[in-house]
Length: 451
Image 1 (cartoon, rainbow, N blue to C red):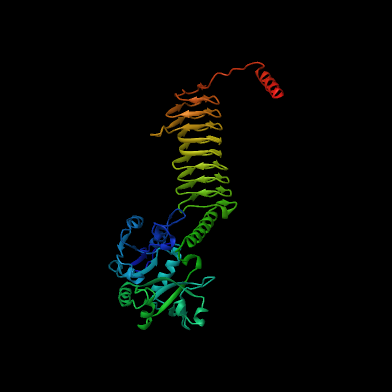
Image 2: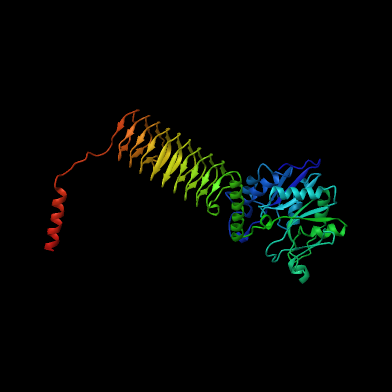
C-alpha cells in the first residue's frame, strides 16, 4: 500500500478521547489490547499507510494515550461535547488537502478500505464532496441507515430511532467515517449545532449540511468485519477473533502450515517464515520470530524469542523473553527457557528449566535439569560449552561455567566451574546394605500380626 500520488496532502484525524465506561476498565478504551497491542495502534498503523499525517484527539490526563500515539501529533478535547466537537480540536492540523475522521474504537479498518475512501473523494470521474464508509451488517439492528438516491449518491443518514419502517428495512448502515476537502470540512464542522437531547455536536450532522449546500456524498462499502465498533468486552472479544482470523490467513498465505488454525493465537508482530509448522493450541506472545522449517508442537507458549531454522519446540514448551535458538535445536515437553541462548543442534528434551543461560552447540541437557539463576536479589548466568552432556536431574547453581565437552553426572549439584572435557560428579556416595530390605519387610509383617 502506498500513499496517493495526487498532489494534495492528506490527514487522518483519529478520535480517541472516549473513556470506554462500558468496558468497566480504568484503561482508556483506545488502549484496550487486540493481538498484543492497543486498538489505537492498529488504527494508526492502517492510517499511516494511506495518509500523509495522522493526528490523534485525546482527552485530558491521557498521557498514556499520547505516548501510544507518538510520534504522531495529539490534541486534547478538554470538554467531551461530541464527535464533531472532537474533530474540531484538530482543525489547525487538517492541512490544505483532504482530511478523514476515524474512530479509535473502529480499529479493524484496513489500509485498502481507507485508500478506496480517499480515492473516491479525489476521483476526477465522479464529483464527491464527502465520502463516507458504510456496511451491510448481518443484523443492522440500531445502526443509522444510509439512504441512497436513485443515482447511488447518499441522500441522508437516518438514525434508527427517527427512521420510518421503510427506512429501517434498508440494510446499508453508517460506519461514521468521513473524508472531505479540509477547508470545506472545517466550514461544515463549525455549522454543526447541538440542538439534541444530550446537547452534543454530532459528526453525522455534517451529512445534512452538505446536502443543504447541494454537495455530493458517496458511500464506500466495506465488510462488516472491518467497521464494527468496539465498546464493550464482548465486542472486544469479537474484534480479537477477527484480528486472529486475519493473522492466521496471512500466515498461511506466506507458506506457514497451521494444522488447526482456529486454535493458534498470534500477536500483531509475530513473524513466521515459510515452511514453519504450527500444531494445535499454540500461543504466540509479542516479539516472536520463527525461522523456516521449524516446528512448534501443540500447547506451547512463546514470547519475545527467536526460534532457529529446523528447530523442534514442544509439545508443552514455554519460551520466555530473551531466548534465542540456533539451527536444529530441540526444546521438548515441559521445558521452560528464559533469557537463554542455545547453539546449533543443542537439546533440552524433557522437564527442564534453563534461565539466564548460554548453551553451546550440540550440547544435550538431560531431563529434570535446572539452572539456579536467582539468589533472591540478583540473577546470575550459567554458561555451558559446546558438545557437553548434562545428566538428568542436575542442578547448576549460577554463576557457573561448564566447559566444552564436559560431562556432568546425573543427580549432581554443580556449584563450581567444570573445565573442558572433565567429568563432574557432585552427589552423595551410594551405600548398599545387604539384606536390609528383606529384614525391614519381615519386621513389618511381624508387627502387623501382633497388632
